[in-house]
Image (cartoon, rainbow, N blue to C red; front, side):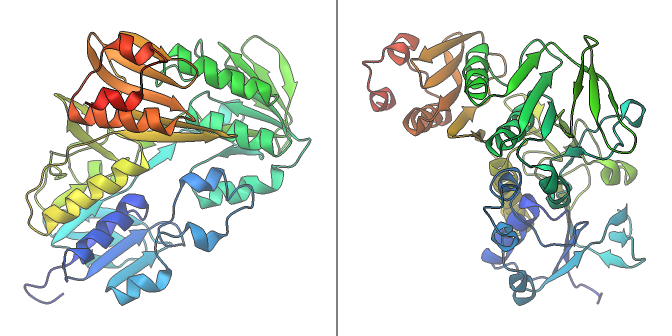
Length: 402
């Protein structure tokens, strides 16, 4: 690299990486960019992986966030199928597993997260045991998703429930186990969990709560599961949905501050100047605490804020959390974060509104885009409607925005 020449290096080729690069170019940032991704394909959408793509309803190319040619046309060097092995903050360069280095003026870490796996000691390495995180995971799982096969889903969070919905839709016999006393224990109220449990029951999914996995058994491929209540069930495939961990190993080895993710300030900068992080891997300030937001929307918005700051904007990221989950014909849309709620107000049949005292924190809307949009606008404006009005089916939701 010539003296004084700048280059932005982005490690991790997911949604946040794609958003950051596209934003840099749209802002007129004309320095060369290098994108380093461990997978052999350019950045792609992950939500359709476990749904439309797994069902064979979406071609691989339609997953791509940009056509591959776009990167060359926009002076983005793609280092795909390549891992960054070390970051040297003093020399401002990144070592790759092919032995080459890339020097940077700005470095963006969009390393994402990794699914938690079952231990080998309880059968986690048997054939037929899958996680749902990337293209290779879903490609490995797809041939087993055949009608009549017996699937065990481990974990009653959104990843597990979405996997159960796809499997049941494809005609598999599905059992889902959740070690906690109920599904969605960390992320949703009992009211929402009950609604979703009923939807799954209507599609023949057997949900067992308060039940853990003792071990998986089989020769080379899984054939049965022994549960914590000592029952044994025959299984043909297992999907593990027990959460994710932020990928922080590179950052830690380089000496960057890590706190349940790579610690960043409100502008997305890590503990080192000109080193940034965004997406699932980043731990960010939010309302006096620190959080990680595992969502497509956060990956895009935070990465675009980082791009603006690389371009000199000195902009602070104001998270506006929202999420969604598709299960069968149910579209669950979530606005806000329900952390710290003390009561839930139900709008009959369609939505649950989380309050802390008189403050509206979050809304879960089930096939009710209007409740979701109204709730989202209220939360982002810092407005909290009277719970009695929300609960009254006669109240027109849009009136709450006045």
